[in-house]
Image (cartoon, rainbow, N blue to C red; front, side, top):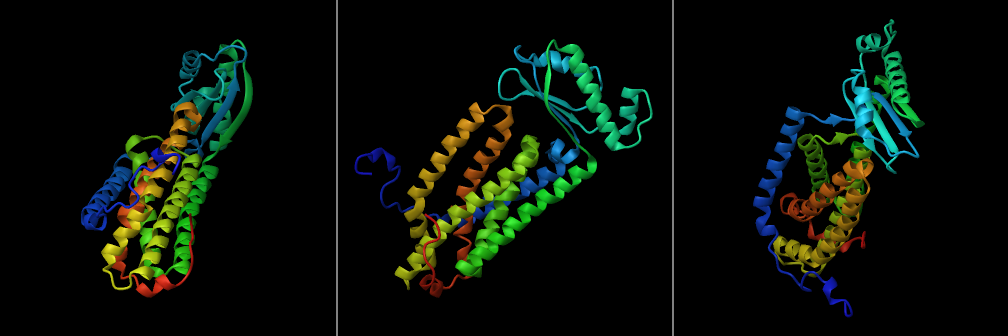
Length: 327
């Protein structure tokens, strides 16, 4: 800091009254949560092929640059329904996604009876490859993945389980290292972040797929780290000020970690925004989810997790135990 004074974004000791704004913050969070739940039931999620089932084909037209318009035109004649075509990697690499089709559509394409959904997806895959081979001068198929309805339903269950298990383990961790009042605040903040992230996808209709689940788990970890830093400072402040009112102690702890929080979130956002801008379509949705998650996670650590301690009746004696959990 001595040689780089511009790094310090805030004065050494800020005195913002975060806890005084807790009623407004709780109201805003409640409205956002209700809005997210409403958007989920009204708009639903734009589930990707991972969760709906379908076919993903990665191909290369090297040395020629891929003509996405020509590829879309060739596939539109097949009447396969939802078909997505996008570049990934170099300008000659293309990713084609075909949503799961029903048996009737597959029979119209093949002109022959189709036994089941798995056979229908294989028929769609063959039709897409035949159309692309005929339309493009040079094409090399890098990978072909077919996800059936049973596999997609298993992925939905596995993704949901991963998020729930992560929340439970976070609750147990905070409970063991602090006390149950802290764990309630931390898990409520995490659930708040997860619901708002799902609401973000419902409103924007960005594709919700397995990388999105990875983004949500990353958000959970990032938000928990921020919350633990604030909680650890709160515990230190309780040890230092044994008779000071709880809201004042919480305010001082949040202000003491505020510069660190802003610097950490800011540098993280720089990296993620770069990923969103430069990474292309393959990373765009993942990066956008992380950007939203970092912003919401930082907000919830300050305006949800810490103020909730005024409602759970945290004990001052808890400040006598344990050490630092995060830096």
